[in-house]
Length: 607
Image (cartoon, rainbow, N blue to C red; front, side, top):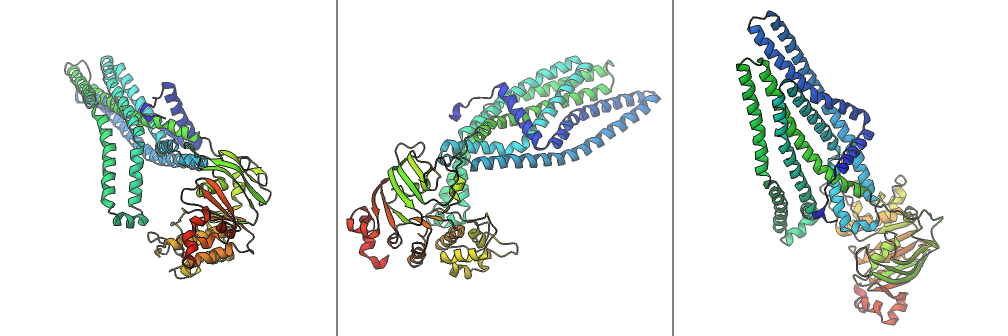
């Protein structure tokens, strides 16, 4: 979507958006919303009633001063009524604040839950799609304000009712002033709406600027990034770049508003002149004894209330106009197709997985990353995938795990196509460790391992076995609180014990333990031990590739000591399989496999 040419909402769309927000709000908290709607009338009419009684009090006091003894008693009743309304207003405001808090919490919780669910249910390719990322940013902006929109809708309605009733009340007493006030508020409403539309355009046109700034700000505050930033002298450079992006975004926004300064001043001047003229006119009428003294308070309060209500109406309308403009981004995001694969489930761990003439191209790319890939993985087989960087190894793993479907060809598990297979059913069979594994710094080491399988309560024996297989026992035993240690110095437990920073190799051992704890029948490892010393890695893969290990193992590695133990080695060159066989068979060919590992083959003692 071209954000520069994003169309404006039609009146019907605008009304539809308002009704949609109101409908979701009501379904989420019907009692609180009902109370809020009553509050709209109370907020609008109580001030007008107070104004009426205040004006009547002034008039009756003037009559009493002139010798009308009954007027004094009437003035006291009006004072009592005014005080009672003031007390009611104060009480209502306190209750209304609580109700607003309840409504905001319930609506925000529901909307954010819906958005998280939608985001995490998208087809995997959407996460690599810039249009989806832009749409998500704009939708997220709207979702952050969704909880406040009903408050603003209620505020707009209250201000509008106050404006209408103020002008109507003026009309019945002084029709000319009512007409003048009505004419005075129209320019302000129009100008503010125009400004809000330009603000929407500015926001949509600067999504990339704000995203870049947010990423920089995030990186600057990550402990793991500080060393590289300082060593490479990037701190000041990134701070300056952040400042440049921030200033660019803000200057463009201010430039939009600067265009309207003159018109806004003119509209404000018209409102001030209207209020001043009304007061001068009514003062003249009172001096000429054509109007009672109380009319000055009545006119002053109603004109002031009408103009302030118009200003409040315009201000809240402009804000909600901007938010409702983004509502359609939110709706469009929520309507993105979610991941829907076939519903077939695996009755058991597949005996064979087949790639049948598979080619794959990333969405939006101009050429295939993988071409005519055909091979099979039998149950219990130990497979290694090798190739230079960029050969397509990680993409092949994404297809094997079902995150992507082939562009051409088929992948099957016991003759069930991945396109027909329920993703959840397939993922239960897998234990996957990627190069960019997750580091759960918000919890302790034990949970970092347990997160491999949270479908069942923690099993201590299984946990200990997984840690042993990952060669992680030694370093965990030396941690201050062992398994209960937090893996970050920025975290501490409930007892105030600070965490410990883990090295890259220690983190890989924890991630491996998590993968082993999952205890799935198919293990997939994508460069899982790059930061682990060669001796420890050799022991890990000796167990993985042992004949006694009946699990299916598929691994990507650049270390000869790892891949040479595999039953079958698949060699990828520029997205195509060029060789396949055992280590001994491939070395004899002196082909791509030999050349990839030639240096390690010539110096075996250093691998």
